[in-house]
Length: 71
Image (cartoon, rainbow, N blue to C red):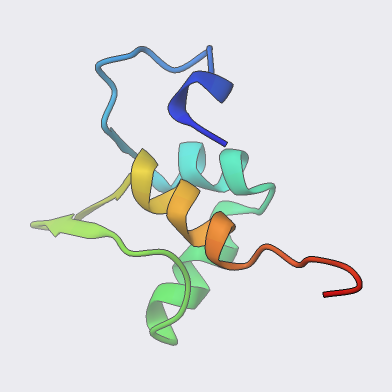
């Protein structure tokens, strides 16, 4: 999976809000909010009260959870 797998995102879009990040991960935004409170989930950046997720961090998070059946 690479950033080209998400053609709806502009190529210059580097950081996403929790709604966009949840959409990519197939989750609800509230799940990401809950995970942040539990110190779980993908890495994020906090600027003031705004929380942003790097697209590369989301891809890394998913790749680290890849399951190889029979491995």
